[in-house]
Image (cartoon, rainbow, N blue to C red):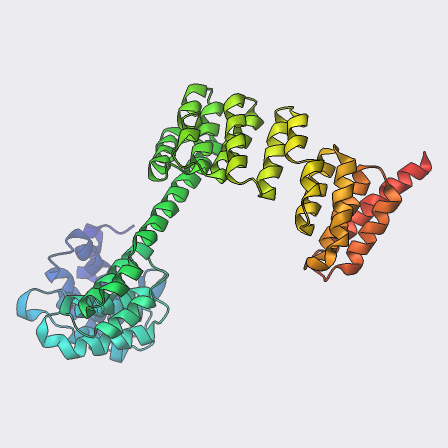
Amino acid sequence: MDTFKVLSEKSLENPKDVSLLAKLAKKYSDRDPINTEKANALYKQIVAIDPDGKMGMTEYGKDQVSCTEYAEFSLGQAVLYARGTQRSPEPLKAFIKKYPASKILKSAYMSLSSFYAYAPGPYKEEAFKFLEEAVAKYPDDPYFRLYYVSRSMNNKENIDRGIEMAEGMRSMNQASIADYRARLYQLKGDLSQAEAVYSQEFMDGQVTSLAYALSSYASFWMGQKKNLDSAEKMMQTAILLEPDNAYFRQSAAGFYLQAGKTDKALEVFGPEFIKTPKPNASALMTYARFWASKKQNMESAATAMETALKLSPEDAYVRQSAAQVFIMMEKQDKAIEIYGPAYIKIQDNPLALSGYGRFWAGQKKNLDSALEAAKKATTLADQSPNQSYLWDSLAGVYLAAGKLEEALKAEEKALALDEGFSTEFYQTQLKKIKDEIEKKTKK
């Protein structure tokens, strides 16, 4: 790599080598980005030597551009950011006009947009004109819209257009965009719209999104068994942000149990959690399933599940979840009491009955009742938009009960009714049943 000293010596030997001069100018800029006099002198020298840009190329990012083109851009930047009355956008505007296909063009537009976003009064009319041009040139880049919004806010002008620009910046940080939009509506005198944009509900969503991001980070590093101190810290932060969210507490408890820290697991997701003033059925079910699967804290898990049932006694999913939890606790009688024959006698929803059949078929228990429910579901098929699902459920119950011929007929019915959404799955199920029949025949 050429050092500053080597480049300086070479430039004295080859004073018209524009590529060499460009490298040396960049070295000067890197050494002192504020005081650019020496670099600018070299750029002016390049332009004087090669006004047509045909004598050498230099790097700009991953691209190659002529040394003259780069020199004119750099000189334009220097004037744009100069101090006092020497500051002017004109050289960069001339660059844009001269090099409409330049690989540096977007950077020139970006620099000028930044300038015009905060330029003083004399630039009022040309500022918005240029910013409109930049947005039209790069409609998919939200930063050009941001500069327009900044100009509108700072100068309290073109507020409606500023709002339009802000509406088109959705790919940027949502909290920042909401702030810009709210401020513009406030300048317009429309506080009700500002509140709609920048509401408590919006910020609650931002908090939840951040909590999920922190939890995902923690889960990733826990899985790698690395960076664990940071993972734990982020996990605890997620809980602080969303203290009533069972998902974050469950993740933390799982981490602590894996680390052999049962006390810490119970601290973040133990009996105290289910004593909240307004318990949520979903959170309670998550708590119960977690501890039942770990075969720990079982009494508290059972209490949580009972509370969830009291909160949502008619909810089929809650009942099914309760049955699952009590089966994990090896309390099958309790499971059947909650989600057994008595339940289907009062149930006439085909999907709920079908779900009941599927559940017990999966457990290979309570199959007489499961079969009764699945059959009843098919008689109510005209009340369901997905009739093939009901027949597939019935086939699954027949299969679990060892009634293979009946299972085959039910699965064929499911396949015949399918509208193309689950064909492959039903064909797989059909093959499974046929394989079972073949095995039975060979015995």
